[in-house]
Each structure stands twice: as C-alpha cells, then as structure tokens.
Image 1 (cartoon, helix red, strand yellow):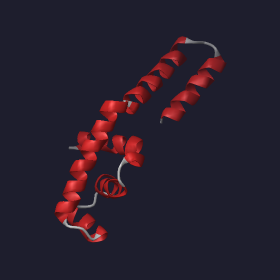
Image 2 (spheres, helix red, strand yellow; image 1 turned 90 degrees about the vertical axis):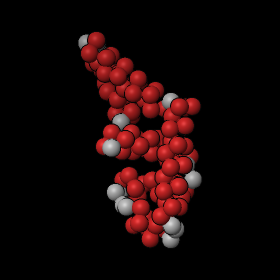
Image 3 (cartoon, one colour; image 1 turned 30 degrees about the vertical axis):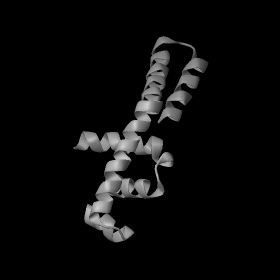
Image 4 (cartoon, helix red, strand yellow; image 1 turned 135 degrees about the vertical axis):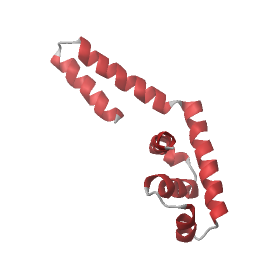
Length: 106
C-alpha cells in the first residue's frame, strides 16, 4: 500500500491542477493528510460513498493523465540524464547547469 500511496502522491503533485476541485480536495485529504473516508465525508459534507467514488475516479484520472502525457516519466528521464552529465563532465559550468536542471525536476 505504501508504494501505491507514493505513486498516487507523485501523480497528485504533477496533475492536481487538472482534477476537479472535489477530486483534488478528497485525494489530498486521503493521501496527504491520511484522513479516513468518514473524516473526509464529515469535513466535506458528503457521504462515505461519495468520498470513495471521488477517490476511485480521481485515481483513474491521474493514471490516465500520466499514460497520455507521461510528465513523470519525462521528469525522471531529464533528472537521470542531468545526473549522468554531471558524472561525465569536468566542466564546472555544465555541472552547474545540470544541477539546476535536477533542482527544477524535484
């Protein structure tokens, strides 16, 4: 479950802006704040089933966005390539630029 949680959190980091407000809110409470379904339902004034549906549909949307856009995959590739550039060069300016790329991917 922890692996799934980590994956979902990463997906939320990248794609939260394209989820519905309700999906984003529910997913953030569930995955970031570790609220239970009942706690989320009470805080948002919806049913537990509504919370469950928002989680399910939100997760599906996140995986669909990554399948179609691949932003996380691209981000990992860029970061790994920048690390490799640092390993392969002695040029300090290039290392500095690659380090800036790594920071921007974090």
